[in-house]
Image (tube, rainbow, N blue to C red; front, side, top):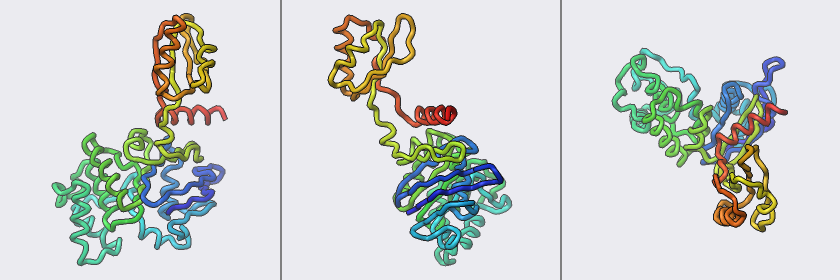
Length: 304
């Protein structure tokens, strides 16, 4: 669906995006994750044709951004981080105007607007002036304009920005619904949002792509963390079910280990500790989630 090859965006000597390549398949929900300034928004602007790459290539269904940008934009719905809206217009008037820009026929606009308003829970604010809306409701208006024309690709830059907890849950449900008929790219610096809705994550650091993986693979637990009162590293290493034992920073009266083994082997480890006449203080599966990975990536980059 989307192919990005060796994408770069430079401003003088500064690389906002540096040699980034990835593919996104039809129907995926992909999270573009990174700190502010990591290059997320620059990549989104290049994907949507609003920013010209310094180098590299972007293909969408075989169409090239730059040569066939208008045809690609017709397939996309885009919510920028700060969605431009006309504050003096009502929600319905604004969406009607956006529908005309998306070339939705006049006979089909009423139904398209009604559907977008329903999907974004804007019915109670449909006739309100945009300038009277809270930031959260304005964000919903931005999402409504992005999905008006039933796009094949929906790109959302910080979609939960300014939303309260109830609105965030609704936005997550909407993103999952959109993925039934569209490819969805969500850019955010909030780990929980990626964890909640995305199937795959692309993590950027200082303009470079440092992780491209499915969440299900990242979250597999293949190690146990053990804390005991004596040194039993060799005893653990001798177990055939154990692949590796790493000693972690410990105190004078505690020994901590990371044991590379399946979590199902926890009872075996507990019996081994008991058989060695050791006191067992901790035996847990290793935490292996986005927060942990994100921290590890940042630490690794700092030491490069």
